[in-house]
Image (cartoon, rainbow, N blue to C red; front, side, top):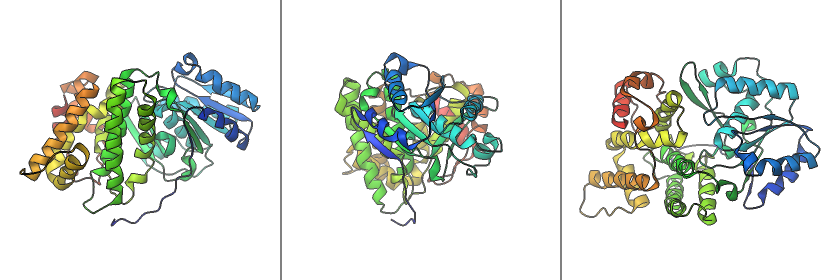
Length: 389
């Protein structure tokens, strides 16, 4: 490994069936006022809400609620949450839901005591908090984003059609604890399950497809990808398979808790492309990534050929004998496409509502990131979106 780095992950995890009971262990560490944050109400239908409320009441907490957090949390929703938390003088934000709910809770946590507009400070200037950060805890009900063990928070500005992710360097932003019960994911619709699976896979890819050195992080990434491929096929056939779903949940956490990024420059352009589509269409995050991934990776493959060849051989078991490096690398991406189609992922942005007349606007909304094998020009971004239609 050629990179220098530091690593600290302060989030405490409770994993497995029955892990919600550990909420009793964590709640006494915080003050009386708790804000419960959740999405569209599915946790009330499946009983998770009632279970969480019983524990909060048993611990004598004074609870306020922020409900209706959407799959792509918006800036107006962020402002609404900030006001709720200020009024309640919250000592803890408890996010119960998927990655969007966890992201939203962290965005609120850094904004409550911020004297500036959080969109300007965090999402346009990419600054760190210089104020008190409200502690966050998570009870995860959907996997994919890895938000339960990182300091990332994605917010969409519907007025400017920008969907921007801020990964904070401040460890205070990371959840203090996260509760991961794979059984909570078993009621998800198939569309949401496979969307989350691809989100996990792409998180690993975007850290893997960077750098040329012999890096331990790449070996870990390959193992995670192979595990995910195996478990995803089982879950696709039988969504109620607890073992497969538990492995998927665990892979999601390690895919984006910064471990496999160590020593890597990382390449987040698929996320930049997908988030632009999400800002225009409000489509499910994992599906926006699936729709743009292959055109992007086929475009940059010549610039990182050896890594794409390694990916083909070590992840998808492509036999390199008698083939050129280009042939092996292409077979790897073909195998990836076959797996994606097997899961039933969205493969083009037109299925998500994108049209050709949006391409210029999509390109304008796409942040160009360094770190990958090639920095894209604006025309290349437009061409990739065209290929994704």
